[in-house]
Image 1: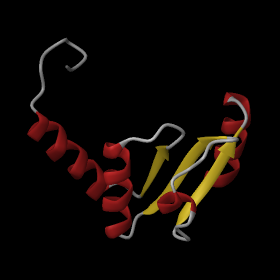
Image 2: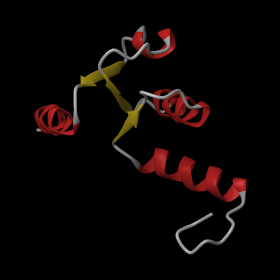
Image 3: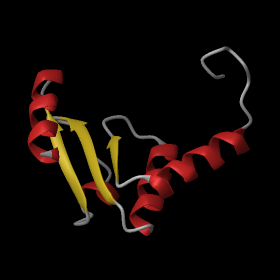
Image 4: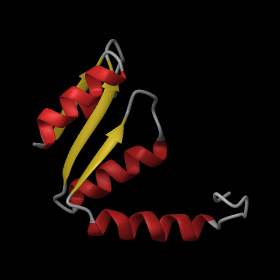
Amino acid sequence: MDAKGEKILNTTIYKRDIKWLKECDFLIAEVTTPSLGVGYEIAYAENLNKKVICLYEDNTNLSAMISGNPNIILVPYHNFEDLKIKLFRLLN
């Protein structure tokens, strides 16, 4: 469903998200909770040679495919304020 409550086709979502990935300078993904879609987007962005930044709550058991990937910038955080500070430093 979109913001208006209208049903969006899966193919429309896929095409839109792939377009965004091709256009972006880097991808920021929240990976505290595993998601097949987010994992797909991370791999797709990496394949496009985009910088990938993964945010996650401290004490989270990340997938080894994320935590072991030297091309991904990992940003653990304690709370929202901590996250804002770390992202500000990273992006400036």
